[in-house]
Length: 356
Ligand SMILES: [Zn+2]
Image (tube, rainbow, N blue to C red; front, side, top):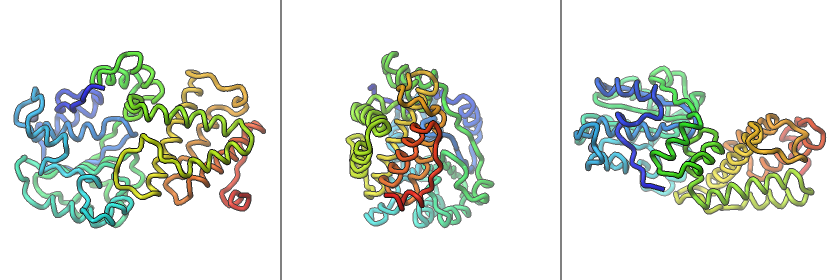
């Protein structure tokens, strides 16, 4: 894969509507608080860095990468606050283990934003996964959002808007990032990442327009993971009880090679693996639903649409405190029974816990 540098905003065209809005903002920037919302892999993080380059860089739209731009891209510019545990958290290992974005982080950010910019005309704070701001942290941040210090731009990134307090939502200018059409993902992979056309076509189709997901297909560890999950899940649906019970026990302990390094608790790592497994298996069933892949005859007694809904329902349970084993046990029980009877049972978790 070719090394990829995020261009300045003037040259980024994957989200034409967003680009138009932000370009007009760049001509007259002022204190502003944004919420950028859209599914994963639609360019939100790319656009934040691209916007910061255009605001900070003095070399003009054609800049190929000056010192300022390089600092932005490596997220080390003194006026750019990338609110993520790898860059912004304190060095205290206990702090890094806390889930979500806690009050101390919001306070720390507010303090930083109250200081004058170091070298750029603005301070830019970017909060990826802003859904992770807990209620108290949102309340702390609210004051800063209501009256942002001069020369400050705050951008919250989230997949959905439902987790925010209404008071926070009302203070932010909402910009929607729609999912890319598959053809856009394909051409981005070819143009910006120098993939060959056939590989780009295949990845875009499987990832259903999610660029972040499509990019994973360039990683051998990821494709191995995907192949194993799809084969294991199909077998768990078709085979005898021992097969899925053994598989669930394995997945409860599994640490696949695609997991990136980083400070996370065992629970967070498990949730990440389980989420990724659901993502790839949902991808397979989306292909089956669209007719892009044949449905094995033994898995045709339920409509692909019902299977997808059932998978999504169980994926939504991951952020709860249920174990990977509980979620997978419930999934396979429900789906196996569904394939046998031609309709999905509606079994609650309470019943499940008394049966296992
Ligand atoms: Zn530059």
